[in-house]
Amino acid sequence: MNTLLSAVNRRMSCYRRYYLCLCKPILAFILCLCYDESSGQDIRIQNPSLEGIIKESAVPEHWLLVSRTPDIQPGIYGQTLPASDQQTYVGMICDSRTQEGIAQELVQTLDSGKTYEITFDLATSAYYGKKIAYGSLVVHGSNRKGEREDTLWTSGIITHKTWQSYTAQITPKKRYRYISFSPYKMPEDTSATAVSVLIDHLSDLRESIKLQTVSKNTCLGLANGWVSVNVKAPDSCTYEWQPGSFKTRSVSGLAAGRYRVSVRTHQGATSYADVDVHTSDILAAVQVAAPTCNGEKDAVISIDAAGGQAPYTFYINEEKVGRQSGVIKNLAEGKYTIVVKESGGCTEKKDVEIKSPETLSIASAKTRNTSCSAVTDGMLTVTPQGGTYPYTYSLSGRADQQDSVFNGLAPGEYQYTITDQHHCQISRSFVIAKEYRDCAVWMPNAFSPNGDGQNDIFRAKVHDAVTDFRMAVYGRWGQLVFESRNPDNGWDGKEKGSVVPAGSYLWVVTYTDSKQQAIQQKGTLVLVR
Image 1 (cartoon, rainbow, N blue to C red):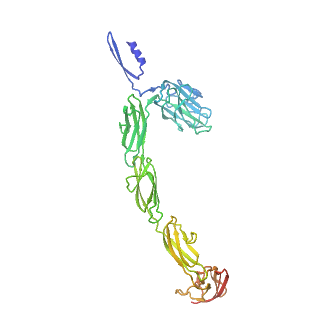
Image 2: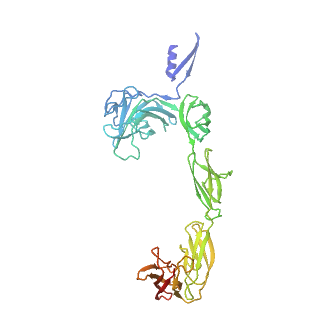
Image 3: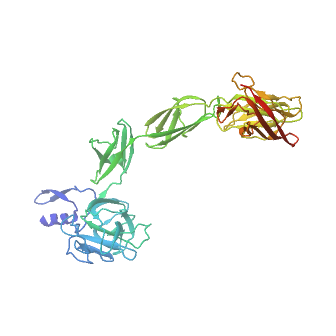
């Protein structure tokens, strides 16, 4: 009987066994029940704390060399970090010529398509016989000692100089007998610098479940987040979420925070995953392009949304059907309410006011008729208001200009147009009349600057299209008391702001007339007080 039980025991591979044996003198029936309390298929790692004699270029018991030799630490090449588990650990380096590593022939093969988890402690150092740039670790699977056939997991860059625990989840492409651990250089790192890794405290390889988690953020100020986990054969698994002790595959009504789900299959394999529920704090930057002209319906509202979960849907003034574009066109002046909704349902509201530019109009339009019968020196000076600066001015038969003054106009009827930056326009008509008189410059012989509004300014009466005009007034002793090159300006009877006495003064006027002749006129005037 003992022999039979021993044989059965050798064939069973259970962590705990309970035997129920029913025996009779003639016929014995043996019923053996096996209850496996492991987490699925666990593969034992031998000497997981990497214990050995501290030595350069050596590997611990049950471990194999991969390529160049690592070291059993601490104490080699300046490594002083104590072991994270028991007494010793392994240190390895990698540079442009060397990639050290350790491997182990597993007591049971890694199965293709299954997912396993293994934890270990990692650190790096600033110096390992040479300057170290950063740390890293790659896990390989293979079927031959010393080979790196399948990359199962990579750590990325490690910078911490103290132990930190890592969990690697691996899914072999096929069955593998060996697992290996090595430092590696990042693909983009072409420098000659070295990298290192310190490794200790490995766990067994535990068969786990491949989990895929999804989440929906909670809206700002609410608790409407949602998390869910997807697994193969979900109905055959049990679930537990913490915090909250939720027992379903999906959980809703969650505040922002980190949630951990534990998933266990009916075979006993257990896996964990962390899921973050963030707050959807939507940021909406709004820009308004006003209508081009007063009364037009061509304004544009542009919304640049960020935060939350894209894509976004945009609504204006409580419309039921939103739009995917944040650019809303063909709007008139007025007040609008914009709502931005992210994919999780959270919203952000913005109130926007669109203002039209002032109506383009004419503030003033001044004309000057021709000076005399034989010239074409009519002039229009126009002053616009409203619209959007800058303005362009056009006159029938002439090129557009930026100047609001039109010179050299012949007698006749004209139409001018003012166009603003947005092509809003206003047009008006005007007339330049012909002065039927001889072309000449007339000078008065007296004036009385007493402020009564009558004959207070000594000014030339120009009835000609003159250029290069200059008028000068001299005192009794020949001193210059007034000068002007603008025929519209005149003398008010003052010299440098001080009133001059009554009496006679000499004036001299020079100019070029409409026939391009240089003319000089001079005479005396009487200032009456």
